[in-house]
Image (cartoon, rainbow, N blue to C red; front, side, top):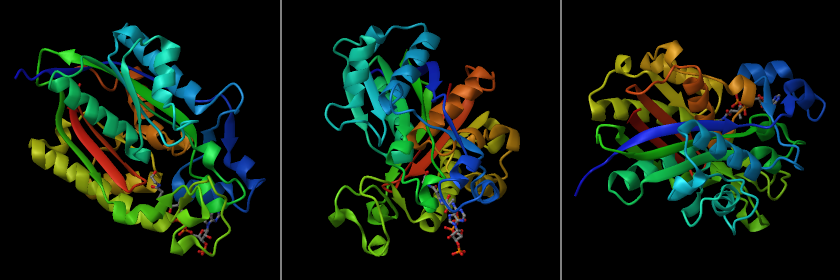
Length: 330
Ligand code: UT7
């Protein structure tokens, strides 16, 4: 069987116009700008207005821009994967609605739920499906509007998140050395309860039973997720470099989920990553869950810091608990 390569044909992103600063949050809950900056690196985040903007509009706009950058039409796609935990409805998927809105005809379309790991999960899946010849052109979107599931009366979770997303268009390439050189998808469901979104009282795990919570809103045991993230982040990068025989210096950019600046900083220090090759934009957007890796990719692409032929390493981890990584030749 022929093995194909995979070309990153275009990238785009979208985030809402509206901004929620740490000082705005100070008026809504018992927190401070200084605490949020010191513990997370976040200064502000963009949030949807809930009227003209929604998770759907952000995801649709991100893919529209990626298609424009690729000089392609939606009808050129034969698959759309939309990674998110905040699609307005579970049926239909936002992927189907986006396909209809952009005119993607009968392209296959589905939503993928892997929380903050969603974009990298979807990238890896797209690569595999193109590589074996099942699909030719795949639109991948990672997007979330976590403001819609944040309890802004509660300070331990809501300060971390923002709304936004990124998209990429991947196409079949004759060179099998292009695209994913290595990939990993992982999950540890035994720790699901450290990051969850309950719909019913019965969903609430023992550690959270005594707390006053709002159904439908995100809950997190921040310290536990932090420990998981710091360890997993380092491990997947070490594994990726070992599997490909590459060194840190071979990598043009480490494209990392923007979970918390301290988590990224820990990886930089433990692995000796060059600071100018680890792009950080959490100060501006907060943690946008499935949106963050695409947002970073788009900023790097626009700035000319990733160009064809470069090797990049993408890393993400989040609720599930899940993680995903790849080493990718652009
Ligand atoms: O995207 C993937 C999934 N998510 C993550 O990767 C997030 C991982 N976790 C984190 O980023 C951090 O755990 C948080 C930013 C959520 C919290 O930071 P922390 O340094 O772990 O704080 P903490 O929960 O250990 O709380 C320290 C103190 C506590 O007070 P006491 O018990 O020491 O008196 C909290 O009550 O800070 C207090 N606190 C706050 N104070 C002001 C907690 N949240 C706030 C707040 N403002 N917003």
